[in-house]
Image 1 (cartoon, rainbow, N blue to C red):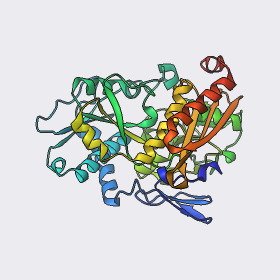
Image 2: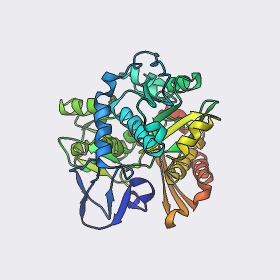
Image 3: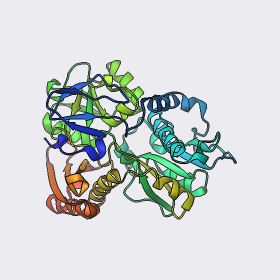
Length: 390
């Protein structure tokens, strides 16, 4: 199965096995599934104590921190050596505090009180929750305000969910670092079914993702997929209130927040190919900022960077955005020497799905992703995305 190929480079620690197994580690998830690989999601090898501490920060951080309203940014603390920019959702704050923890462990001077400041920045994508991402334009919705703060010098580094980061970066900003990747798969949450196949005809599924919508409708055209946005906690609350019959989320987010008990099914790649860069955390800084580049070099997980580079090259070749249902996953094999890639593009109604596979030397990751995108683009024709945006 595609979802259980050699993924140890970005899923955490993987061990062979064929029995029924559970996602364990920092989240101590109770959800179980059957696969040919036992995936031990340990949040990049972090200690359970550190992960729980990050969740506590995330749960209360939005209330304690300023700078989250409008376009305002919290004033810099003059004593701070590093100011981290982030969105204000609990998951985003978890990611920012995880970055803070890693920096403190790597550099003693950053472990001092007040050496690192976290600044919450409200983005366009956070402000207009009733509008679908596709209708808002798709690119930079969760990053442009943070980019602007970074270029002004209000923040030094910015922590992003990589699937939110456009394939282009503003002049003056670079992306030198990615933390070790989490499980990239999607999960189904439903009080009415234990799997996608068990959902009844006509089921109402909440999702803002055209990628998920298209793959769901390709399986069952009677599904009604409705816009469903908000942070993890909001979406789970709406699900429990019966607003929808089911929803789908990234396994990585649920795992990081210690909420895997809500998952009904962890969906393998053969059933739902994940988004480009799903499960990866990226950290940007200003181009030429040698101090920040030094800090981030110590945090970078090269295997994750290699795989995500291939995926983003694929997306860029297709000129993809939130208005185009595109999925792509890369994974390393042969001890990291080679990379394999699988990509998908579809119409939003699921009526047409095209896939591509490529492999080669890991050092050619960007080229492999770009060529896979070019192959699909030639196959689907120039009007495919134009129809997708109607």
